[in-house]
Image (cartoon, rainbow, N blue to C red; front, top):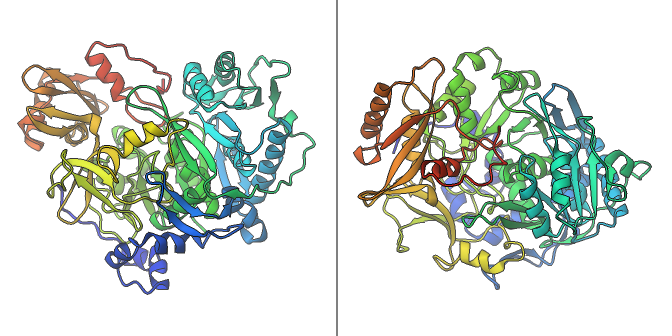
Length: 631
């Protein structure tokens, strides 16, 4: 485990939001805060006071029905009131909420007041369609402002939104509409992707044909392509809101009322509907963005994820708006029409905080250091990473080439299920490249062996969370038994993350990837992320994906799919060199049995490598649903 330490600049520490919180409560250092915040009622109660509640809570945490925990019981709350309405009496009203850039290059600036009015009109439009509290509404939309507007409009009237990533197939969309029993689908005529129009309405029509529960389809005119509109069922967005009031009072909801469900892939192949609620989710997301990324009134925040995933829900839509922040909302691919598209946006809009995935960083690494060097990135003051463990090589490249060799990187570990960052540095934390560092205040985590004992320092084990947290999932939609079985049955009373992780002697966590991405090579447990990290550290390698292939003697053996940097020749000699390189970096046990060179690795549009697909290919099995593939 790399032990080099990167200490935060004194100025960052002294001016940080977390330091201000500590000073307010007379807390001298981070260790004391982490210890004091184990009093969950105290810590989360203090943080929650910064939001607006229609009626205060009777109790911060009710654990009487564990593992079905409840937070801020008895309180009345609405997350949208905290995102928009409460800002209307403050200077935030005139501030830019979203700087939206489309793939073709149009730029729109939405103030908080404009957003507020549009959300209210669309909320009134949903009411006109008969949508009421508790009804489910499915969204199938690209990265345009109408996506968060539709989410906020649902939540404002107490309806439950289910956002389906716009890259999914009609079959995946249909399954999610049916499972949620959605009354209304919201989509667009088309979306732009790499210069082409993707016909979303066509997929929506195919899905709705087999989902009779869905009575209406609202279509936003985005691309201007011809689409069929079914009389009595389909309605254009602009027709729906025409003449409606731009005032709409937020529904006072129970703190535990459902806010949204988000489907995540299950190991069985049947998607799991993760349920999040208004109160605790708001407290968790609001506070973690404020403390981890240290957002200040003049920051320009860019979470470069897709709203279709939890990262977009929590850190493009809800948390930035609650914090009164200005955010970038970008529609297109990171490298279209040129691989420096992102850096031109950072330069032009003076982005101060950038949050992206290791996959995106490695893609930029592949294009070389010249592209970021062409742009003035000096507005940046903090960087972040999300989605998978970041290998030290990519971490250093990110810091050196995007962060000018001086910026701290907030490497966040969390899940769709957790709703919010759980293990992550704060701006006052010393960093080790490749480690998500320590659990945040109010979070308690550990690493256990297979038989449930605490793992030794440096030993790979299973990540667990030892205490509940406000933004946690409440259940799996219509499947409470599966919720208990999946997360709480392996080690009763402890939440099983499903991630392979080691903890070092300083209490820093090192994530290795999913447990189902862990190989058992001749009795040794080996994270695929570890082998990938070693490969990517080689000077000729841009990206790598490793899967386990069954071996009659060793159990599993690693097979590597590798893309090389531009201009590097694919030779057998290089394959041999890479095998030896991994053996040297990690040990003979990790040496790939086979290396296959690829021009591209299959990825989802959010930038995650689809190892499942590569594994199916390696085993000669059907590849299954590939609708989330980028191309």
